[in-house]
Length: 217
Ligand code: AP5
Ligand code: ZN
Image (spheres, protein in one colour):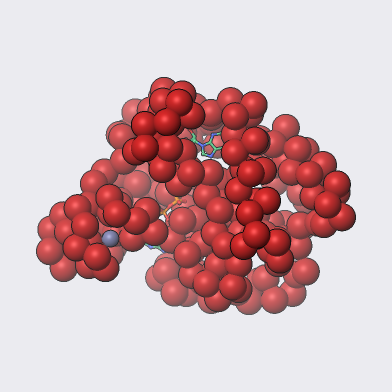
C-alpha cells in the first residue's frame, strides 16, 4: 500500500507510523526524521533544514521534494510506503502525484489523524526522543520511561527536540493550518481521505487506523 499520514504536530504520526508500517510490511518514511538525521551528521542539507525547523517553518520545497523522492526510490519502497510529514503543502502533493503517475503508481489512502489543539500541545510538551533511534518515542506522563531520561528499548539518552518549545509549537500549528490542511481538500477531491480520531490509547488508535485502511486500496 501507498499511504500518506497527515495530522497536526504532535498528533501521534510518528508513534502510529511505527506500528502501521510494521503491520503492513512497508517502510516508514518521515521527512522530519530524514532532516534530523542530516542535522546530526552535520551535512549541508542538515544545516539548511535546521534554520527553518528551529523557527517552525517548512524547509523549502526545492530540497524537501528531492530528498523525499530519493528515499521513495530506494528498493525497500518498491511495493509501498507510509509517508509521515510529506507532502506538507499543495505543491509537494502535486509533485508526489506527478512522480507516482510517472511510475504508473497511485496512492491508496490518506489517513488524517484528528486531535484537538489542547491535546497536541500537551503531547508535544511531554515528548522525549531517544538519541539512538527516533522511533523510540516517550512521553513524561503518557508513556514514561522506567528510568528518567533513559530509553527503555536501548538505554540511549532521551532528549527534547529543539523545535518543541512552546513558541515554536505555536508557529508549527499555524503553518499546519495555513499550508498543510489544504492538502486534505486536495486529496478529498481524489476520494482518498479517511479521517480517524487520534485520541485515546496508542493501541486503540492503531486499531482504528488498521480498520479504516482495510477498506482502502
Ligand atoms: P516533523 O518531524 O514531521 O514534525 P511534526 O509534523 O510537527 O510532527 P511531530 O513529530 O511533532 O509529531 P507526531 O505527529 O509525529 O507525534 P509523535 O508520534 O511524536 O517535522 C518537523 C519539522 O521538519 C517541520 O516543522 C519542518 O520544519 C520540517 N519538515 C518535515 N517535513 C517537511 C516537509 N515535507 N516540507 C517542509 N518541511 C518539512 O507523538 C507526540 C507525543 O505524543 C509523543 O511523546 C508520544 O509518546 C505521545 N503520544 C502519541 N500518541 C499518543 C496517544 N494516543 N496518547 C497519548 N500520548 C500519545
Ligand atoms: Zn532508544
